[in-house]
Image (cartoon, rainbow, N blue to C red):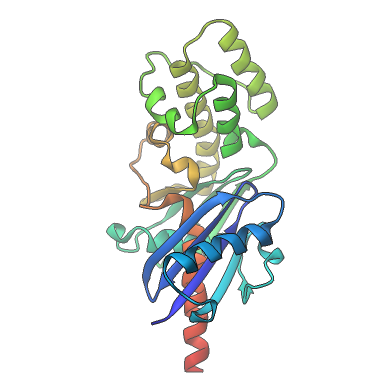
Length: 267
């Protein structure tokens, strides 16, 4: 039996995925913290203990994400775009490989990736200059409204009149939301407005890239069904969400680790 590990070290969370051949055996998601290395080692020990595995049984480890160069036990590193594409296509078997556009929202950036009919990256656009279209913005909203992030989706569906949030800068948008709270606007209408603001912002990126179906939305915010609906309303296209949207990039890193190991075995 062969095991392969993928680690995605993001700015806010670290994700880890362990494959047993071509099966997802285990995964972990936790806050990155101050030390990527210590966080990753802790997750690895947790997985090994749960499945009674030895470190030597993992054939290859691939790291990706902004902290990928900080993991000294990784055998290799890969760009998060490459890992994200590989993991997203693998995570959507119902699409039979027909993934043409990926919308990925992380903690501090958002990306739109365009693929050809063979699942090869053609182009991508990234916003890492402003938090207004990222997971960090959603976290800011939960802090202001004093709610849990998992409540964003259900609350937004209760909205009767989504409020328009005009600011494209996260700092000004935060002030705008605080002002709406002071004016006694409902949390549901504020959240729905924030969702549409994010969808509108990233939708512009997607249109510049050229939207092609099928479209997959991944990253932690894809767990928010209210945001998924906002994207579908904005783009007027069905949005697919993988079974494990938060760990697709880690899965992709594990798949690439396996592919590299198999290539070396057959060389």
